[in-house]
Image (cartoon, rainbow, N blue to C red; front, side):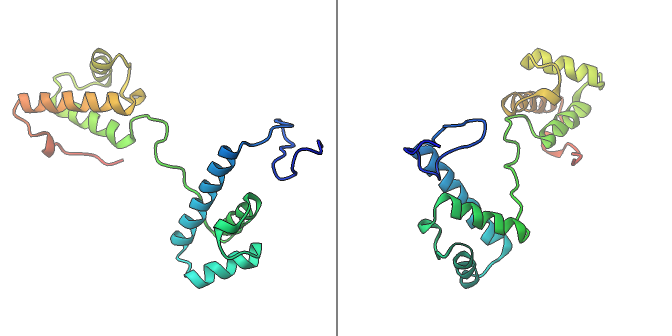
Length: 166
C-alpha cells in the first residue's frame, strides 16, 4: 500500500488506489447518519438506550464524533437488531403501479374499444411510448389528464371512476 494514502481511505477492491474525495466522504457520512437516525426512530429506541448503544459499539456517544468506519459499525449493529433499509419508492422515474392501474380504469370507463391493444395505441399516439407499462411519471400524468378530460367530455365524473387498488 502506498505510504501517502491513509488506510481508512484506501479502497482495496476493483478501484485499487482510488481515494474518496472529501465531498464523497461527507456525502457518505451524512447518508450513514441519516440512516442511523431513521433506524433509531423506526425501532423506537429511547434516547438513553440509543446513546449507550452508540458508546458500547464505538466508544462515542454522538454520530458527529464518529468516523465512517464507526458509523458503518453502528448501522451494521442496527441491521442485526432488525432494522431494514427500504429503498425509496420508485426511484426509477417510472410511473407507479397505481398510476398505471388508474390509467386502465379510466380507459375502461371512457373508451369505445376497451382492449389493451387499443389503450397501447392511444398511449403511443399521445406520448410516443408503446404501453402504459413503460410510461415515466410525466408521460403517465399526461395520459391521465387526457383520459380525465375524455371522461368529462362524455359526462362522466373522473373522480368517481371505480378504482382498483393494486
